[in-house]
Length: 167
Picture 1 (cartoon, rainbow, N blue to C red):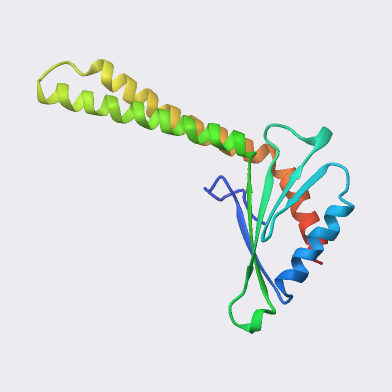
Picture 2 (cartoon, one colour):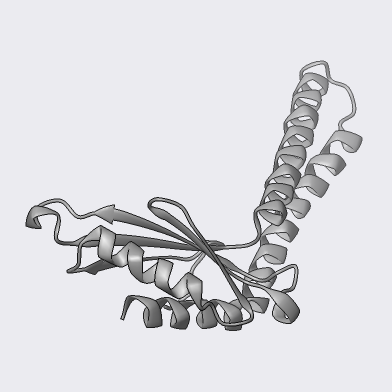
């Protein structure tokens, strides 16, 4: 999977398998019985969470979310798999929370700046805060890219295990 030049912070992949969705799910259930150390797998009806666990786990360790869907046509003998790599849900939630805070401050001071501009009042403080929020957004993007880069090796490990499971 090529992720180095991709602007998305959460890489995705898709795979079609010529097996029934129940057979594919059963492969994951069988794997979960003998999961190697260092990996954690959680299985729900058509959703699978696959992640790094134990000594190798870091705050930037990726998680692989897998959705199993029946492929239309083929009389339900094919499965469409959607995979999504991302950080831990708590880290991702915190990351999005920071984005909303920065966006709120940005919009608030943008409104203040517009009001002061219309009233012919000085805008220096408002423009400084707007600039700082823009720099913060850019900084968050690069922090997200760095986090993904740190987890790239573990992302490949998860992907290799995924391909071992589905055969």
